[in-house]
Image 1: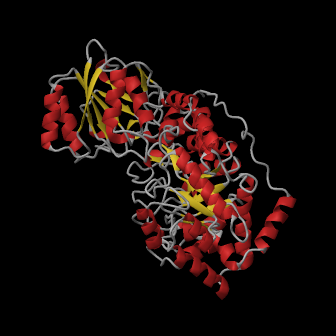
Image 2: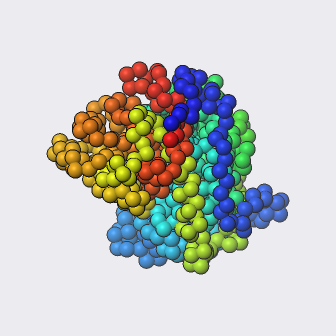
Length: 613
């Protein structure tokens, strides 16, 4: 057992990690080839054809193309009665076909909670139905179908599609080849289901351990390491024919407010932003990123009006367009989030976003109000038609690059050939095996021995898994350990275990040789601490596994064996179980520092820390 890196001070840790570069690459073949070349830039002839297409559109059709909207239901034509009711209540239509006919939207975003992503064949049929509706318009235009498939804790499409470790786990693995391979396979599978845009990767640099909305969605806290991983994923997704989207500009990594429910402030100076936040976005642009998503955050250093970045012309035009030289599609984060709604009404937000430099308006809470407000602003002269047509040309060129004008459809055969294949699943497991991080192993508690600790209890937080991604975590860990020769039993105790559950866990451990406890964002007052302390008091070996943010160990001083999986999804939990059982080395290294709970300015474990057996 040895430390992968010497202990460094907090400030030096980031600098040292930057200088050291990424961990050794682990290339994996994917068996993918037919869309591996980058899409060429549209020719002058293509631009001319798209301009002629725009000239045929009515004002309503042009404005509709700027919107990307949600729709409820598994089918474009015949959703379930409850989905029809939801569509009528929120949008005033029955289904996707009516949405496209009424508002001429340029894109549709899929969500699990909207019942769009039950299984791959259904997704493909929904996508085909949407594209048929686009082709049936007076001016036929294909739709850009998108979703948030970051992997890890944010995944809208679940099994049997292949699910990969999330960004921070990949950051712990440190391999750009792994990041590129994961994105390429994920892109191939999305493409096969008719999804041509993925709102990934997350380009935020998570330098705030209290960040409630980014955290493990980020590759880490080292700007240069994050930039390398972002560029790798951009090339992977777009090499597979799917538009990539770096988010959330100008950088959401240093906030303690969730923009879904409030308006965060980022207090970085211009110099700090250039050093901490800008590198991943610069790398994405250099890699040819198709789209960039805005953040509903205030950055006073860049805009004294304190408008959120989504509505800020100094940020979106002054910095993103002019300083960084980006000329691709700019899409808002969801306009239903509170962060963009707290200052202006829903009728002003889309107009201000377009004036700021946005091209696509994502998921407004009331599409009728938003669509009408943009038309009114054009009629009043607040918005210029020439500017709207420039935005529309960008959107249509993106659709052209992604093949939507020539081949917008998919087939069941393509789904069966590509989605969730044995080779893809095996590659996901191999990548996950390089991500689990061992933070502490005092006294050589790990790996567990099938002779000494054959009977294993698994307790802890059974966090709700992303749509269709498996779980529950304690069950996955127990099943995997049993398959590796242990006799493992799951006893979920939750994130706020009662005293009765804690007592039950202690009693159950009395009949077993060791316990694995899955922890989830432990705080100083968390009942999870009480559970861990009660288990430690038994004297039995206790293995703590952080299944989300890696900071839990700072609150659990008595633990002798501590690991991080960076997510509670099956692929990462199986990899952690293989490490616990000694079947794989814990190769991951911390991509963020873990600070001491009693001295927050001091690193308990720096970037790059990780033990091996």
